[in-house]
Length: 133
Image (cartoon, rainbow, N blue to C red):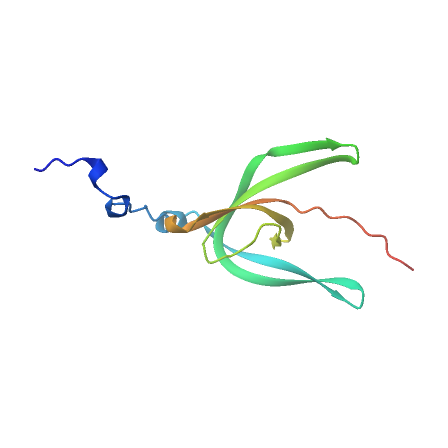
């Protein structure tokens, strides 16, 4: 058996096989429909449209509900993690719906090499706009 010095082996030649977690996670994932909300201005009004994407994933709590106290007022934030198949491509600040709940994408961690992707979600801030007569 030959003994070699690790300093003599380039990193590109090392065995860097990452475990593919897609088969393990498939038992954990559920079928979900993610609605991606887009906003456009039509006749000086903002119109929201939703495009649905079928994927497999799971939504779980991320951190305890957090209270922010600012001069404008108080707001309680609920954070979630979405682990899903890498075929679902979302961007930071996208607004999505899952099971009729609106979320804003606040972070993204790409574990594509492991067979999944993780998004950090927070309840989307909504306001009630008074209707004009």
